[in-house]
Image (cartoon, rainbow, N blue to C red):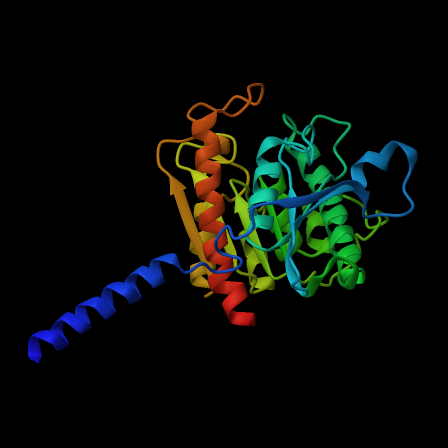
Length: 310
């Protein structure tokens, strides 16, 4: 009899373990095999002719999904505020795979600089201010149309790589007044007098940075920071850069008790490449690391946003 009980217990444990291994979680695991993409929509109605392409987005949704009130991730591309678009390989990859997890994803364009922000930090600051205004316009657009897109207006997440990560961080933690001041913009610039914070649910910062760590005291927005240890474009810390990288943000978030996670890809540079080169397409190894970064971010969002809301 005792042997039978032991055998039953072992069998039951194996079955439970197998079932646990096969359990999938919406918003954490890839549960949809296909994604619907609606391209070149606009998140701003009245725009100047020259800016028309700046306000377009592609919408990614899981095919066959019947759930409403889904979290939205707004994805913003890199390119130093001079180049790039919603069509970059990384943005398409993350938008599609997070839609496969059950999210609605919007890959957006934003205004790029006509100056030289890559070699002039003052111009980069100015360009980031205008890009942040565009990100805020996108958030407002989706809040107003949340029923149309089946999204939860209280669960909007900002995510981006490089310059896109910079936009996400500044949008979540800084006010227009603070950002305009550091960019040396006059208060006659649209929005520059606004002192209020812009509420979002979380930030996924892929190798971006924040201009002033003190801004993180403004809001308790959960943040995941992902970067390469050898990043020379946006270094992990402030020591060799005019902005604060992911390691600095992680340390400050810990000190302020803001939910956060940090993942460092040891030995890799910007965009998680071995040797960053913006003129060459990312190879299979880099894309594999992008997918790993995406899973890390998905796990973080599941623990800090999804489980907390359900």
